[in-house]
Each structure stands twice: as structure tokens, then as C-alpha cells.
Image 1: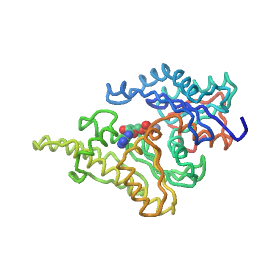
Image 2: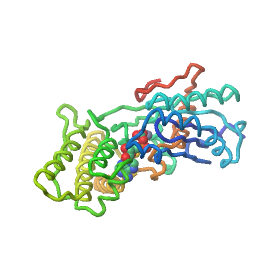
Image 3: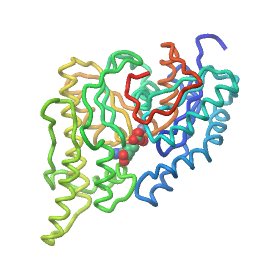
Image 4: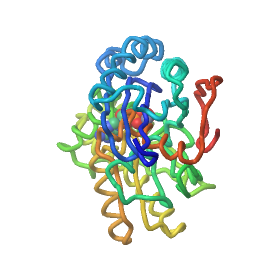
Length: 341
Ligand code: KG4
Ligand code: ZN
């Protein structure tokens, strides 16, 4: 193996997916194994942290073994072991971090801790071989809504963030309120296809002191109030119309704030990332808005939008090139800030 080929075994266990991947030079995925716990957590209507940790410890060795097997490699072929060390559920993160440290210790391979959001952003590098910083990226997941300027590999400036609920969290809560269950995002998207997005006027919140910040608790409350109002007045509730109208309200705000930033920062490239980035209405609205402004638009495939380890391997490669090396004291950091070491 020449010095120009860097292979990384990446591990992700920050929430409810136990995942491992082998990634070559940051952009070539040799394997990407995801063991989802969604069916288990659906029983409780959301992620139960302790159950997530217990499931991770049960699955992690199998997932890693399968990732190496599908890549047709052994640990000896790896240059580094990468792992998400924050943000996320502490008990869930600890499983991946302890595993990565044990493998790194036993094999003598370099250990690289990766920020989960940096992973989501880096998912864009995998299928868009021409994408390089600088660019703007909207990260929309179950736990985060960040508008980020990617100045360079590993260099991030957060322009805006949510003041309350994350976009995905709002999808999950509204889905629960209209009886669609967990996880809400994909279910709202499916229901919306049969609904009228203009049926109900839900609010599009602006945050007074920062045009790039978001607030989604208002639209969530408006949906709940609308449902209560219908019940009181005996008006028929049409979940598909609520889903489509709510989704449109969220997408409109995301697009408006993102394009404001595109204009102000004279961005030539714009990307989306995170679980909500697999939403086809968001994707098409962003694509149209970017096209109108002559801006190149990037997005990962749905499987690389939701939590996976290939994105951690992509981020880890650029961290590796930048000299990031973690020691035996690496710990889970549940509220890790983007850009912190
Ligand atoms: O990135 P992710 O897998 O986990 C976090 O880091 O949070 O994102 C999960 C979130 C959930 O809130 C889920 O409802 C949302 O992404 N999501 C979607 C869609 N698919 C997943 N939201 C809207 N439309 C979708 N198609
Ligand atoms: Zn995520």
C-alpha cells in the first residue's frame, strides 16, 4: 500500500444506529454497514437512551466484522480507527468510543475522534467527487439545525442555528401529534404526497437578531393548536393536509434562510446534510432556489443523510491529513461544539 492510499475504519454510535464503514481516501466507500434500532424504539415513540446503549454493545462487534469482511480487508490494512465522540447520547457514544480505543490500542493504529456534524457535512464528499471547500452547508437532523460556512476541510463557521427544536425533532413531534408515529420525517413526507400544502397556513418564524437562526417550536405549537381547534369545532382533521402544510412551512424557512446566506456570502456552492436532507420536497426546493441563483447544489443519497459511519470515515480522512490524532484519554463529549478539539 502506497502512502497515497489511506484507509480508515470508522465507527458511529451516537444515537440509534450502530454503524461501521471502511473508507479509502475520504471519498471511496469500501463498505458501509448500518444496524438500525428504529423498530425497537418505535415501540416507545422515540429513542430510549439506555436501550440504545444496550443495543450498541450487543451489535458493535458484528457490525465492524461485517464492514471489514465486505471491504475484503483486515485491521492490518487500516491506517486509522475513527469514531464519533460527540455530540449525541452519552451512553451511546461511549460504546463506540470504548470500542475504537480498544481496537486502536490492540492494533497500534492511529485513533481519530470525529464530530458527528462534521461527519454529516462530509457525507457530501462521497458522491460529489468535485466538491471542495469553501461552501455553505445546511445541516438538518433530529438533533441539529445548523447553517454552516465550510471555510476549509475541518474549518467551520456556524452562521445560524435553531433556538429551540431541531427541524427533524419538529417533524417527529408533529408526526406523533397526527398519529403517524416514529420516525416522523419519512412518515410526514409520505403522507404529504397525498395532501394539499396550501390547505393550512402555518407560521414561518423569523428570529429577530440573526437572519440565519431558526425556530421551529412555533410551527409545532401551531399544528397542535390547529388539531385542538378542529376537535373543539368538530372539523374533520386531514393528516395528509397537515403533513403537507407543515412540511411546506419548514422547507420555506430553511430555503429562505439558506438563500439569504448564499447571497450575503457570495457562495458558489451549497450543500445539505443530515436526516432531514433526505426529504425530497426540501431537496427539490433547495435545488430550484440554487439553480435560480446559478449556485451548484449538492446533497448525499438518503442512506448517507441519516446516521452512518461512511460519513465519519470521510470526515476522519481530512482530519487525518490535517494532523488530528487522539490519545487514550479520548472520551465521549455529548455536547461537543463544531470546530472544538
Ligand atoms: O441525521 P439523523 O439520522 O440523526 C441525527 O443526527 O439526529 O436524523 C434523523 C432525523 C429524524 O428526526 C427524522 O425524522 C429525520 O431525520 N428524517 C426526515 C426524513 N428522513 C429522516 N425528516 C424529513 N423527511 C425525511 N424524509
Ligand atoms: Zn446524525
